[in-house]
Length: 275
Image (cartoon, rainbow, N blue to C red):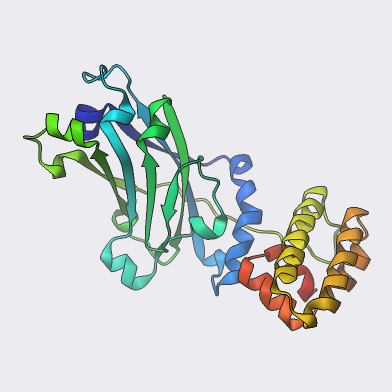
């Protein structure tokens, strides 16, 4: 039994996702990596884990609701110092735009990722799930080095902390070695001239075009006027699935709009602009 189970009735488990169908949604999200960084996804294996937080409401302190016992649960994912220097293990949750449960906050970094779960969110749950995406360079061949450290720290409410007055703060923390044993090669097929855009690609393109239009409009820059017209035309072309016109409009968009698309992370538009 871990300290979290002992004092709070909380158990953390990880499950690796290996099913290609479950991973398929990542392909579109991972396009951001190539659009926003010099990251070459072909050099990495991707590991996707779901983190399941199980809450036992029959805990010995069940006379107190969980929200009265725990103020916040903090989960830290940390790359070991050697891999930080070599850049062989990285987190890209922020670029992949993982959907977080409402009320959960994240602190981003490519070598450290922290998730904050408020006790009020955990109070009415039996299980809470979130995801971790990790990229490991193929040059990292030693299996024993393919791991990260996960620290799960419970921050108690003051009244409950007083009841546990003899317990040291370190005892509210559980550390886990998360080992990566089964890699998945995440390959991405960009839209090309040799094939037609799929229904999903039109849908995603339309979403990105609307985001770009809204962003340029808020800039209130007179030089954006022509680009805004082109984007409106591209939106119409995307709605009627006119791929040829869509690409023509995007090719004529200026450098300012291209830069904005890159800054806010619109990978499909960026790829179509290059064609």
